[in-house]
Amino acid sequence: MKPNTLDEVYRKYMMDVYRYLRLLCRDDATAEDLVQETFYRAYIHLENYKEERVKPWLFRVAYNAFIDMKRKEKRSTVRDDEFFHGLADPSALGPEAEVLRKETMEEVREWISALPDQQKQALLLYDMNHLSYQEAANIMGITLAHFKILLFRARQALRRKRERSNEHE
Image 1 (cartoon, rainbow, N blue to C red):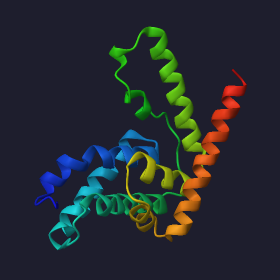
Image 2 (tube, rainbow, N blue to C red):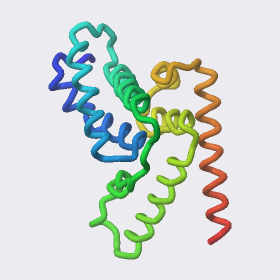
Image 3 (tube, rainbow, N blue to C red):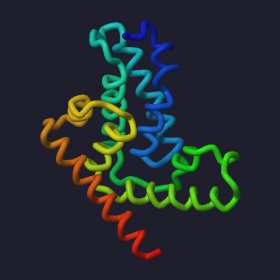
């Protein structure tokens, strides 16, 4: 069902768009700026939007805003990422479990950040934002087959890193 107003779209998808952009750019302030840019662009074009599913379109708008920002920059700056630290409810865990969870989430974040850009993008769109293969491929501007290869390689890389990490424990 297509939301009727930008306000409805914002309330429903803002956090998904923010998390997606946050993982792409690894900076809170930049992600917040890109969310604003995404919804500004959505505001301009929402009345002309005819598709049923708004979320894939909105992610495409967010991705385009991110790419435009990257084109303006000559290099990216990596900063601390707090996204994964909020995934579990810390109050439900004991102190030891909380420390272990934070360490594990930081390690996973580093693994994802170390992936090549297209593999990272595929993983974020499909596994973390639950878009279909075709929707994610469209957002990235690649074929469905290429998307599946990128996702497979990203998952393989994470699996290898996890196995190496488990060997060292």
